[in-house]
Structures are given as C-alpha cells and as structure tokens.
Amino acid sequence: MSEVREWSREDAATLLRVPGPADDKYSRGVVGLRTGSSAYLGAAVLGVEAAWRAGAGFVRYIGEGRAADAVIARRPETVVSPHAAGARVGAWVIGSGTEAGKRTADEDRELRGILDGAVPVVVDAGALDLARGSRAPLLLTPHGREFARLQTQIGSAPGDDRARAAAEAAARLSAVVLLKGAQTLIAHPDGSVIRVDAGTGWLATAGTGDVLGGVLGTLLAANPDASIAEVAATGAWLHGHAGRIAAGIGADGGAHGHPIVALDVAQALPRAIADVLA
Image (tube, rainbow, N blue to C red; front, side):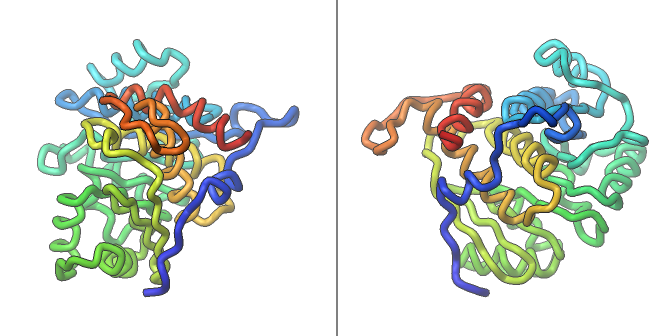
C-alpha cells in the first residue's frame, strides 16, 4: 500500500465547474438511481434530492410504488421509470435503502444488468453483495459494518489498519472502495489511498449515506474521464463540507454546531459548491 494522500478543498475544486453557454442538461451529467424500497423509501428521496442539489442536469429514478411516488412528490423534475433497461445515464447509484435478503429475482437480474454495463456504478448497502465479478467500473460505499461483511465475503481478514484493509478489499474486488467513517478512506485497486477529513460528527445520522450516494453519482456522471477515486474523494469532501454548513460550523471549526438531518445536508450542497468555486 502506498502513502495515504490527504484530499483538500483545492483538490475538490478541480472536479467542480460552472456550466458554460454550450452546456445542456445532458452535458452536465445524467444520473440514474435504482435505490429505496417500500421499507426505506426515504433513501430514494434523499439520493435523488442530493443528485439534483449537487448539480446533475438530468436525474432518472428507477422504481415503483411508494418510493417512486415519494420521489415525484419531492422532486417532480425527476424522470421515473419502473425498469432500468434502455435508460441512458452517465453513472448509476444502486443499493441504498435496500436489503439483499429481500431482493426479488427480477430485482436481482436488473441490478446485475447495471453492474455488467459500461458506465460507473456507485454500489451501496443492499447491492454490495453483487459487486464481485461485475464488469462495470465500481465505486463501493460501505460503512463499517457493511465493510466487515464485505471482508468476510471476499476472504479478507479484519484488522485495525482501516487504510490497509480498504486497499486490500479494493484490490480483491478490482473496484474503488470508499470506506465511510469519521475519516473517510478511498482506496484504489492499485493500493493508493486518499483520506478525507472535512466533515463533522453531526453527520453520523440516518440517511446521510444516501445523500452521499447521490453526490457521488452526479460527480461521476459529470466527470466521465476523471479518476473514480479522485471523484469519490471530491464527493466525500463536498458532502462533509455541506454537513458542516448545515450544522452551523464556522470555517475555523471553532463552533460546536448543532444536530442536523440528512435532508439538511442535501439542501446545503449548493452553498458548499458555491463556496468551493469561489
């Protein structure tokens, strides 16, 4: 494993841009989300909200029932479809708000189809078990407990060195691994690791991971030629900065801040982006 690199505001700024007169909704990035479920419909809403707030030009939501209804009620500009087949996107977000043990055969086939495609896929929560052997460029986003299960699946021994463990998992899965935590680590299969420490403890609340997924999908769709690891680091930095803004923490880190909910983080994303661009 190579030396761990710190990701900064200046690094994040290199992957954010102001749309120009030649841009349209497609050139700004098309994101597809196959997320949420009847049990966790909020995951669908939060991911879609974050994708729009992070600057997507076009967002597709794949799903039906209460989750799809909730998405349209919150963000009517979203294009909702029951199935992913034929949907043209620049990046996918899958798995948030789903459980592998409750996946139907049709859902399994659809997710595997996405994972065998050509565009990058952000893989979270209930789809992490499908990552091994997939052909699409992957960005896996487990939290600590999900990562422990992933290690068991790939035969990787647990350990106290999070950076080394993330790098090993990335190498074994041939995927970029974003390991969530107080310090977020992004590991590339080549052994390189980026550390992002721009957030706040107030982000440790339900739904913020769903918001991160939407941010990552948007940035991947908008930066098709960039390193997935560097896009992931920028997304994690931006998500953390939005969390600090939402919690009322000053730029000098002097304030303790206050409790927030996931939707607060999504709504703070435009201000966070403006701050970085400035």
